[in-house]
Amino acid sequence: MADNYLERRMDDLRQGRLQKSSASPRTGAAPGLFGKYPPRRVVVTGGANGIGLEITRTFLRAGCKVAVIDIDAEAGQRLASGEGVRFCHADVADPEALEQALDSLFYAWRDVDIIVSNAGIFRQAPLESDPVGEFDRAVDVNLRPAYLMARWWAKWRRELPYPNPYGGRMVLIGSTRHLQSESGTEGYTASKGGIAALTHALMMSLAEWHITVNCISPGWIHSGDESELSEADARQHPSGRVGRPSDVARLALFLTLPDNDFINGADIPVDGGMTRRMIYI
Image (cartoon, rainbow, N blue to C red; front, side, top):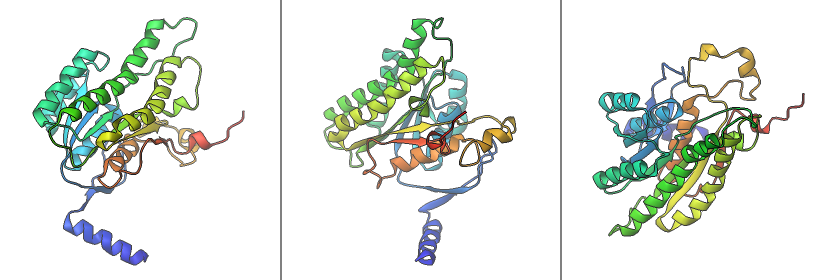
C-alpha cells in the first residue's frame, strides 16, 4: 500500500497536481510538496512582513491571486512591484480604512475566496504602568479586524446573485499565549484569546455561505536569521527546533484546500509541542 501511495504521489507530481516548493534562503527550510489548486482570490492582512509575508508567498506559489492589506507602505509596494501582489495600504485598526480596502478588492474581484486575518502587534509592559490605551490598541489591531472582515464578507455574500461554488475559508492567526502567559502581556494575550473564541462564533455565523473558519495559534516563530538562535532555544522544543514562518504558512494553505471543508472551528497550535510539555522549575 505504501508503494502504491508513493506511485500516486509521483503521478500527481508529473501531472502538475503537486509541485515541489523551493527552499527558502531566508529560513533554510527544506524543500517539500504543497498542493496546487485552481486560482483562488486571497486576502492577507499584515501580509508584507514576518509570518504574513510567508503566507502571502505560499499562496502565490500555489497559483492564487493575493491581496495584502498592510500598514507598511514600503514593504507592500515592494511586494506589488516585485511579486505581483495587489497591495492595499491601510491600518486594520481603522474601521473605515479597512472597509475601503475591502470595498476595492470585492469590487475588483467580485468576491473573495479566502481571508487570512494575520495582522497583529505585541507589547510587553508592567501592568501597573501600561497605559489603558495600549490594551485597546491590541484589541483594535489583533482582534476586531477579523470580526469586521467576516461581517463585511457576510453582507457581500448575501447580496451576490449566485453562490460561490467554493464556499470560502477564513483563517485567523492567534497565539499559544492565550493558553500560557508571562507578565505584562495582558493586551496581547486577551486579544489572542478573543481570536480563539471568535473562531467558533464566526464558524456558526458564516456556515450559511459554506465558509469554514479556523484558528492557527503559533508558538515561538522566528522570522530572522536562524544563526540568532541558540542550541538551548531549539532543545527546549520537543520538536527540536524553533518554529519558522513556513510552518504556519503551510498549515494555512492546507486548511484552505478545496476538500478540507470538514475542519471547522478548530484552534490548531503550531508550537513544536511546547503547550503540551510539562515544565516545573
